[in-house]
Picture 1: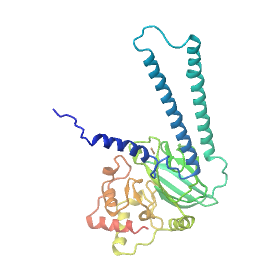
Picture 2: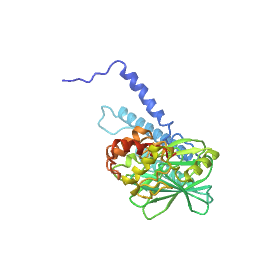
Picture 3: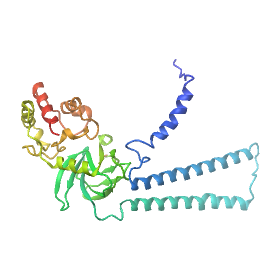
Picture 4: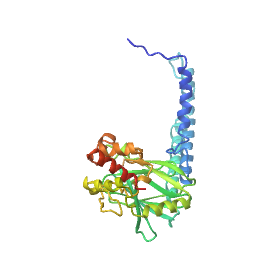
Length: 340
Ligand code: CUA
């Protein structure tokens, strides 16, 4: 028989854990409590207001409950309030006050929700985002609405610019959520939804699909990289360029392996014969920080493991395993890592 034993340090451990867990939500790159835009700030204020009102109500109800229990102890007959007082208590405490609080929170929530996207008609930049299974495709549009560059799972935006996102899906419903910058907006098949980001600070923020969309929903993440305007312009120029021609012998063979193994059926590498549209555009794969929709860091080891056995990393995803001879596999990795 095993017994649960808590050491003497346990109370201290838990006493430290609770505030740490609570405050952990107030920092971090995926937290609505660490707002980095005016819209996220309004949402944060609403969150704290709801927490405050909820806490006051909880304390009030608990105190009334304790008073009732204390006064009523050991008695069988009704005691305490007169009939009028009891009715007033029910009408004000049970109807008027809750109605006031609920209506207040709903109205302020609707106001903040509608205000988040309102008042902006002229974007500084438009990005079309498609929810795929289970990753994000981002296409940057020029002023005329023509595509400039396509990338996946890592969306760069310039700081302090009004960026409009056109959200599409050709499969199921997803939800675009970057808690530090904005509330959620769904990607609904057959509809183009809009959301706006205007980041107040440079940094890397994590976004997450917020609508259950299948087995890999939890691993349908992405990064929003907020760059200075100059860094962003440079980044977009690089992304718009076709892939550099392979320079080393290994990379040349790697491109051949890419085509021979059939990777081009699903992936596009602009500037080569690979024009597939099912999977992410790999033209500048090596410039991205993560692989497989922000599931893991973009390193040689992870890239190799992902290509050899993607079902191990993200079971149910649409990418098949690529089995080639070890030397050709190394060539393939050398080529993909040259796609800066
Ligand atoms: Cu896409 Cu959940």
